[in-house]
Length: 416
Ligand SMILES: [Zn+2]
Image (cartoon, rainbow, N blue to C red; front, side, top):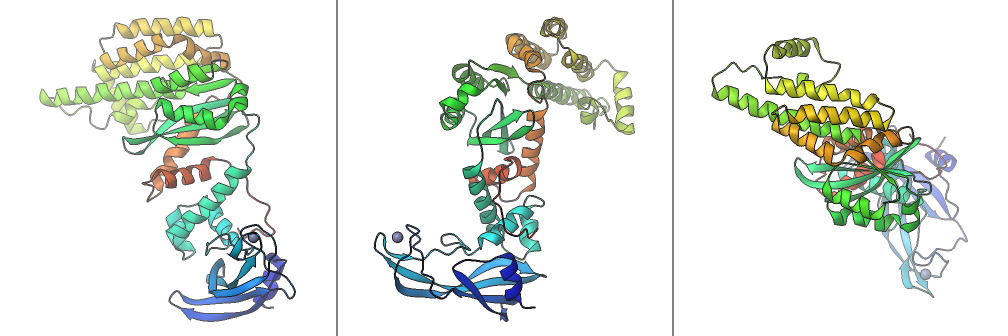
């Protein structure tokens, strides 16, 4: 059997035929080159207007990366024709295996993009002996195609979230769809300002905006402002994930301050390695359990903060917003007397946003409550494990690829 036979099985082009396949020694080692030529009597198609046009001249032979075969790199080799198009003037012909000036065939790009969902871009590049840049461009193509072909009807609930691309710097705003049964990244924009979220709604469009029933967000002022203005018809929910995050931040601050104070006063570094046993609510390791038991013997500020936030967990189990509200009021009163400044700040915040927090119970059952948290976790993993995501563009391509749940075209053959 010849390579040509396999190619004709899996990847046929109407206006072109495969020629001979041969081994060629290159700087990348021994590779397979497959000649490709126009089918007899088929006319070239203009890349400007997509219509057939008379020939003009021929460009140099070029190689297009195709899917490797048994670890051997494969290239399609073809000399593009130029056309004298009556509509567009002199233009290069359009070929069905690659778009524009791309040296990656579309088939190979989809192949790389599929692998890039399973491992890091660096790993993909290494595994298939191609460049990181090629993998990026492959994923970029897949994302662009997916974004252009996705269905945006029926978005009822959204969650607004933020992550920082580089620790503490450069925030980006992410908007997820968090309907039961459909969770995905809808949009992302640079910064976390009023303008950022406004540009989301501008892009989203009036009609879809009016369909929204629930909007989840953090207590971040710019977001609150835009949501209040643009989606006042929907139920605005301050979601659990962000509230818990605020409490954990407060514990962190109290612990760090206290550890510093104790060190200054010459006490044992009692609080060393205590962070996780204080923040974790369950699944503590044996060692963390022992540490916590040890800490509980002392009336430390961070331990009291830990106990306070632990008590608050009960809040989320309520069904009725009224009872949940009473629970929250009691908790806030206690916390305000605790003399733990960062915790008091949290309590004040809860009081200030009481109704929006209680909306969490009104929305229960309509949106998947842990959705924002889950998406946020995945977004963090994606940006953390990927190298070279300095720019917003690259990070956005990576995030849409992993979280966008983007559609893919029907391919004649699945290579992976
Ligand atoms: Zn044309």
